[in-house]
Amino acid sequence: MIAGIVLLLLVLYPVVNPWQPYPQGVMLIAFLLAIQASSWNIISGYAGYISLGHSMFLGLGSYTAAIIALHTGVNPLWVAPLGGVTAVVIAIVFGSVVLRTRGHAFVIITIALLLSAQIVATNWDGLTNGSDGITLELPFWSADFQNIPFYYAFLILLVLTVLFSAWIARTKFGTGLIAIREDEGKAASIGVNTTVFKILAYAASSFFIGAAGGVYAYYQTFLNPVGAFAILGSVLIVLSALLGGRGSLYGPVIGAFIVSLVNEAATVYGGSTQSRVLILGLILVAVVLFLPAGLLPTLQAAWRKRHPVETKYTDQTGALSHQTVAVVRERLPDAPVTPGPLLEVRGVSKRFGGLVAVDNADLTVERGSITALIGPNGSGKTTLFNLITGNMPVDSGTITFNGKRIEKLAPWTRGHLGLGRTFQVTRLFKDMTVLQNVVAPLPDGRLRTMFADAVSGHEAARARDLLGVVGLARFADQRAGELSYGQQKLVELAQVLMLSPELILLDEPAGGVNPSLLGRLTGVIRELNQAGVTFLVVEHNIPLVLDLCDPVHVFARGSCIASGPPQQIREDPVVLDAYLGDDWRPQDAHA
Image 1: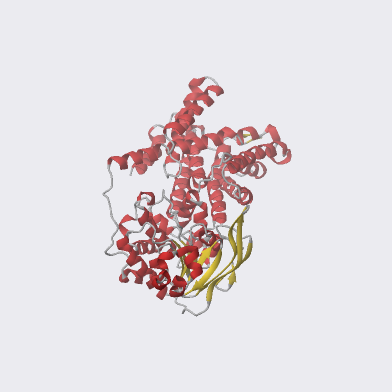
Image 2: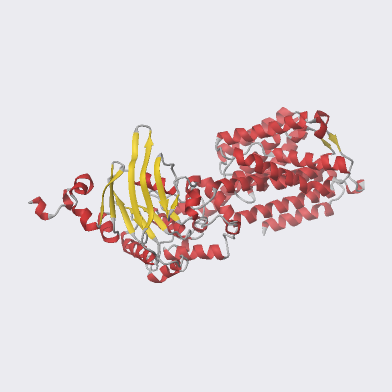
């Protein structure tokens, strides 16, 4: 509602006050900065990869439109979208390389790309006219219209940019980007192809900036390398998003208007470029110290604090019931369960310096079984899980899943093959809602799945069904970080079920779960197993393991020391000495 009112006022402003070109010029520059900040938000706000060279795309778009106009005589406004195309192509080419890095390295490389573009534009005289720049013809419309056409051109681009960003946020692509920002390793384990997602996000963040660059070149009528590829432009983009609220939809736009107006005031009244830079620097320091989340998220947090949501509890009566398990069963493959190994681990080892975490381990999980993996802390169970799912590379050995070697495959590819897992310490995306957490997994790598609506439609309905299975449907719109530990465990189970996996690796599923719900949890595992899902369970609750699992593998010092049915394992002297202890020895053995 508020956004609609503001947009209406902006649309009407030149009509109500058409004879003042200066305010129109100030506003259209604010629109331009908002376009760049909102676009930057896609790669740096949603995905969390901070770029300090994003003004490069404005320069690329400007030079594309200017060069085409200079050589063909076509008005730059009509070819401005080609500036966006150029920006996307460059983003894909260089993004496929630079997005292999992260953190400070990525930030530095993006600055280097911006400066490199400036150097290329300066030295490629035959194409860009070098440091002399390119001069374009004056606008073709009457001087009576002044800046009004540019005003509306930038406003339209801003509206399209915000709508595009909002659409991304609604899709599984958007939830995948936020998952990458929160925990990139976990995102990969639930089927998110982090490489493709980051490259697409980088490209998506460049198009409207490039298109706006084509319009900006015509507005300026003069273009040179220093002005087109100015690093201060990138700083203003980042400052705008940080001030308004990185990762939010309207935060970067609000921040851009504030920064643009302050920048204009500093230019008019400051008297020098140094004064302007000083003022902007002070704003940045103030944001970091007092508004680290940004203006809009801070206001939203204050509102939630003053208007707390009613406390909710897990629906233990309806959770994990036989009726709700049928919802999950409907989404599982109909292929009959055939006997034979589903997962085979052969001679797998993993070392961390001088420490051998997994030592030439062998393990077989039969299709349709509920297999247990037990052993003392530090025996290498969780490390083996990480090797199976691809969170860590193996040093040696082979891992075969469903007849296919997977030890060299990416984690998301293993997820697409039907391999899912939960973690010993829950790794939910804490700043995302519960519904977003469950919608985020991708069971395949198809574009149709990637760009499916994550807020409504089939995917969201499916996620809500799965939340109903674990008794957390009422928590769908609550932030995952606000749930109890046991509730987070249940959300993680629903998240894995979203992949429709053939094999689920459960790492201590009973940890932190309400004891009154534990019986129902084992019931849902049995139900899913009967529906065709195979389980490999790491658990220290030995009575639960002996009641639920068959067979049982025992790990110690990085390798399997015993395997067999529960009764055999509980009486094995090697297992008793290494893990279970005297309390599990038969009574006659104590005599």
